[in-house]
Length: 402
Image (cartoon, rainbow, N blue to C red; front, side, top):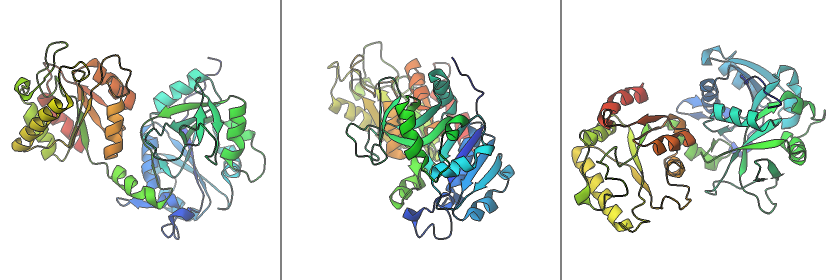
């Protein structure tokens, strides 16, 4: 690689706007100080950054800056070092960043104060270094239509179009921030009150300098009122464990054979009790399972539904609960996004239950389960004959609940 900078430890957060779309909540506080479970949104962002190895933060403030600085101080109470750069609230993002130029490291993370996304920074940094691009932006693929697209990515992974008006044809994906930048990019900004995105993005796209890090993990926002209910659920962080089925809950059939009816089902010793232990501990249980037998004609969707209905009933009689079961009905070579090792079912569960997958354990017995967990950013525990679900659950509960 032509350029291998040191892994950044500095994050710069744009947090100066008035947040008028959140009024009246923002009449007396900036939008990143809106509270969830008694903590401001910005505190959750700072906690995530600390977990990802960031040590120094620069907060770019404007509107009611004392509300932020009085709460966070020098950052020591939150395990980081915080520097503040304050400009008038009317200032645009480009001017705000340029005014902080003297505080910026040679390479740093730039993000917005109103989006939370569980950042896998090691993966991002690897992608950035391999691309050897001066700038990398995080892009939510938006396959679920969560928001309006504002960009298009080329086959080589670089942005081809960035359209802040969201009106161009062929847009697919949305910029959610979390940019890795070299300081020299900021030096290109004119010494005028300009928008960072509207000024620099088109130039970077034109010069083939803006690579994308793409994600299917939904982001959560305090940008407007309609986002707040989902953000509240997400930040409440109900403890959840995702389980594979065959080989974890029930005895796995021989290769290319399937549990085709409830008569074929055999609980693995201790698995039923393990689910009940999770439920009694207040941990939600979700199942994800490949079921290629449907594509191969060995069983039908109705057959599978009958099996899962009986499985859930057994769990409920024993005192436990399964909140959802996701299955992939496709064959090995169908090229779907849901068959493990693809992470599609994990992302579907994430969107349905507003999970933070970086804090959601996935337990499976197959290498494909581990690959799916890695792709989705889930911590993974492997179930084996000598390490069944029943032996994993008790220490796992302690880890999750501490």
